[in-house]
Length: 339
Image 1 (spheres, one colour):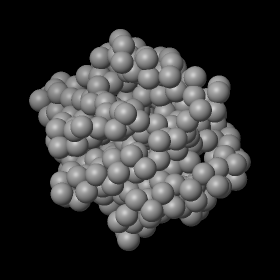
Image 2 (tube, rainbow, N blue to C red):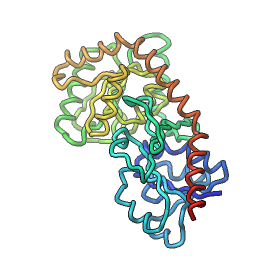
Image 3 (cartoon, one colour):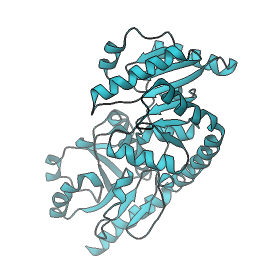
């Protein structure tokens, strides 16, 4: 059996894209490790599943994996592995990773390739993503307050009482712009009592500055749970890939406000496939914001059909994981033949 090392950035979304592949390699009898620089909230789960953990670079004095699956954004580590004659495969975990491909280092693309502009595959590029297994990804335990919200949202759905709108955004690059947006949302709540607005954020800044909140606006200092967003009618978010994948599986229309380059890449593809709408830069009033939401809700059924089609493409890709494992095993065997 062979040893495989995942060396990726410590981002939960990225780690999640690798979990199914790592688990299946482990089940096939291979040794699977993650570097300590891949540390995320999934680390304890991976350890429980039998994955190892390597300290970079110290443990490489005695440890030499057969193949390193290296996050393409960590290209500066190539020399370290080459000096030790360790074979490398790049991992593509976001759409920009497809740029500047190299014949020397194949790219295993684990971002959701059906969501890209064009799916392609050749000797140096294998488009496998998303390799998803929701059972093997940790779901945060709901707090008592979130459980009550879940019950209330379920009641709304059954009785068609209110529309539930989730706001899951971070405006870290411009705090003032972020606060203006949340003030806009607050004013929208006051004028549209038929909506229940749920804001999920890890920042207390918005919470302190927005009080008092309207009765139909709830604020949660946490990430949005899949259980909660699945019952929503619409999501407003920046465009993190993990959140968008959940939206597609739950046919949840999404209004996008990208902040980072990666979020802009994701947003462009969602709009291209007709799965969401990017918020207009000139959306400065409650009426503007309301119009954007109405456009999405008016096209909700059409969006749901497209999202269902996309989720089936995702499932088809996820079903090809054994082909990916065979490809990785062949790369290891090729190295052994060369030696």
